[in-house]
Image (cartoon, rainbow, N blue to C red; front, side, top):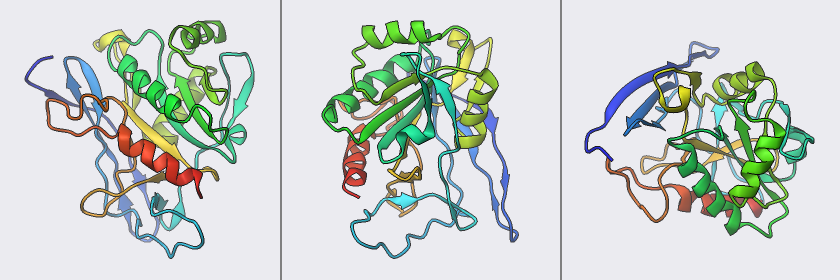
Length: 252
C-alpha cells in the first residue's frame, strides 16, 4: 500500500435540529491506495449523555438527535434467497449493518472478511444477524448474491444480502444512516461508499461504545482486521470491540 494517504471530501450530510441546535455530520472519506475509508466526524450537538440505565441495559450509547433515540428506518428488500426482508425481520435481534457490492475491488473484500469473522464468532446465536445492502442492485440480483454468499462462506441464517430499488437503497445509506454512498466513475469499481459498520440493538436502535473522551464512536470501522491491529495511519482496528459490544447487546 502507498505510504501516503490522500484525503477527499466526498459527501456532506446536514441535519438541522430544533431549538437552535445544529448537527453537521461531515463525511470524510480517506482514500488509501484508492480504498475509501470512512471517518465520520462526530458533532457534540447530539444529545449523547447516557440516561439512567435500568435493569440489564448495557453501557453502550443510544444515538440521540434532539433528544430522540435514532432508530433504523423502515426498509424492505429482496435477499439472496429471493425472500422479502424488512427491518421487522430483525426485531428481537442484535445485528450489524453495511453497504457493499459484489464487484467491489477495494474495500468490500476487507469488510466482508471482517464480517465473516463476526459471523463465525456468533454462528450459533439465533438472536444475531447481519444486514448487507448492495449498492449495485442492477448487477447484484438475488442469484448473484446467492453465488457470492456460497463462494464467501456466508452461512448464518440471519445474514441477508439484499438488493432492490436503487433509489431506496441509496436513500437508506445516505439519509437513513449517513453512510456515504455515491456513483463515481473515477473510483475503483465506479462507486465510493463507507467502510463502516452500524450496530443495531434488539429494538432497532443504533448503538455504540464511547471513545476515550466519552463521546460515542457511532460507527465501527469495518476495514481494519483484528490481525492487522492498526492501519498505516495509526487507526486501531474496531472489529474486536464490535464483537464485545454485540455480546453486550445480546444480554440486554
